[in-house]
Length: 343
Image (tube, rainbow, N blue to C red; front, side, top):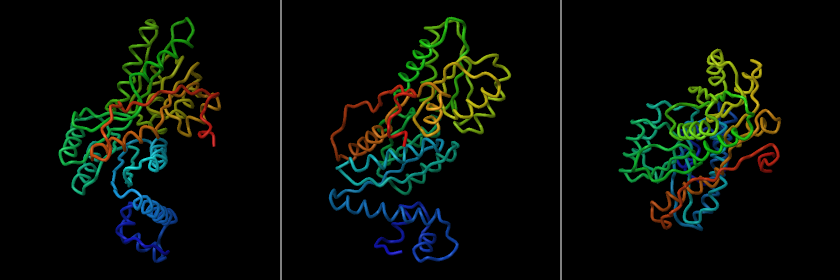
C-alpha cells in the first residue's frame, strides 16, 4: 500500500498502534479486514486534510469523547465529517473515542490522558458528576478548551455547551401529549439512560412540570438505568412493568425505543402515543412503521459546527460568538421525515 505519511501519523489518525499499521502497510498476515479498512480510511483522511491544510495553514486536533449508544455516536461522526469542510479558519482533525457505557473512572482516565498528551480541544458527552467536573476544570486550566455536547456538565470553566435545548424539548413533549390524550386519567411512562446526565434530567423535570400543569390528574411513571441500550432497557422495563397497571403514552428521553415498543406490545400495553428523541436509523424505522408517533429532532451538524467554532474562538481564530449553542427543535412525524434520513 503506497503512502507518503509517517507511520506514527497514520496510527494517530486511525487510532491504532504503529506495529499494527506497519503490518497493514506491508501486507503482512494476521490483519482483520476491519483493521485494514481503518488504515485505508485514515490514509484517505490524511490526504484530504493535507489538501485543506495547504489552503488554510492551521491544524487543530480535537478529541471527541462520547459515552453514548452507537446509534448516537454514528450520527455525531457523520455530523463532524459533514461540518469540517465548512470551517475555513483551520483544518480540524477529530480523534473519536466512543463507548456505549463510560464509567466515572473510565471517563476521568480518558480525559487525564488527553490532558497529558495535549489537544487543541475536547468535545464530550458524559455524566455530570463531581470527578468529571473536576477533570473538565483541569483541562481548561491546562489550556485545552472543553465543549459539552447534548448534555451539559456543571463546570463553570467549560468553554461552551452545544446541542438541543433540553428544557424546551421537555415542554414540547408535554404539550404534544396534552393535545393528543383523551379526557380520561392517563399514565405516562418516561425512560432515561441514567440520572446523572444533566440534559436528560432537565428534559424530564421540565416535561413533568409542564405536563402536570396541563393535566394534574394524570400519573407519570419513570424508569432509569437502561443506558439507552436495548438489552438493559428491556430488562429494566420488564422488571418495573409489574408495578405499572397501564401505559397510555411514552416519552422516551434516553433511547432504547425498539426494546420499549416490543416489551409493551408483548405485555399487551401498547401506548396510544409514543414520543422519542433523535432521528437515528432505529427511530426512523419505528416512525415510518407507525410504532412511534413523534420524534423531537435537532440538527447535530449545526451543533458540531457550533462546537468547532467555539474551539476556534478560544484559540483566537475567529471572533467570539454571542450565540447560545442551543439547537432548534423540530417535531418530526411519519409525514415529514427529512429526505436524507430515508436513504
